[in-house]
Length: 330
Image (spheres, rainbow, N blue to C red):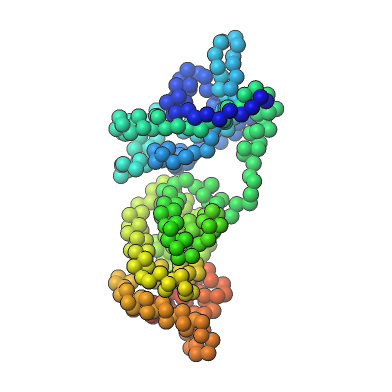
């Protein structure tokens, strides 16, 4: 192989190449898997929001008999097909300027033009033999690290619930950092997204165990539609706004910066119609003082201490923490 040459092409170029028969989307070594509607919609939403997508790799060669260029998609077949299908009105996707999913024909002329002018990164494999292509295809599609549960969940689902949780988690990156709830490594491994997903699931279904299977199930349940998204967003905004309005040290300098206890605090606040700021601050400081005092704990205090330090993700421990926190907030 001579080299890999990286360029950008716009979506209109992909459409033109496909119409002219100069884009081979079905080379013999490509997977024949077909994306779900939610996966397709998610990719288009990514483009409509002008966010980056992975590069497409193309082997560029010349058909000497026909006298034309041939571009063979080595990696990115489903992305290319999805883009072409959307422009042909094959399915609908979320657009930031529309309340509901829309097809391409439902976009305004300016919105259509903005999409068609969107740049796609392309790596052209120049002078690549079949052997080179197979080697590169295998390297691109190999997994270089062991994925955790949330990273697997993120790869498995592309629908409404996933997009909602990603948005809610990413919009609070500065909060996670300021209050030391999640480290940079945690965020890079999507643990804050898993945390938000668990909070949302508990807001919908009531207090329950932490369970990777249950999270997978709710991602699947709301893959196509998440009708209560607006309601849950209001609830999340309310509890986080209440916390942001406090002296930050009542979180950063106390036990409440620990993820399991912060989780319980969010859900306890969510269950109350009204929360007094002064009472909330005082309660958090009082709970922290009792937690760190080994001499004067009641049986209830001891139970909370145990529920906050031992197996913290089970329903029994979550219920103990929830009831204890509410006692100080009501």
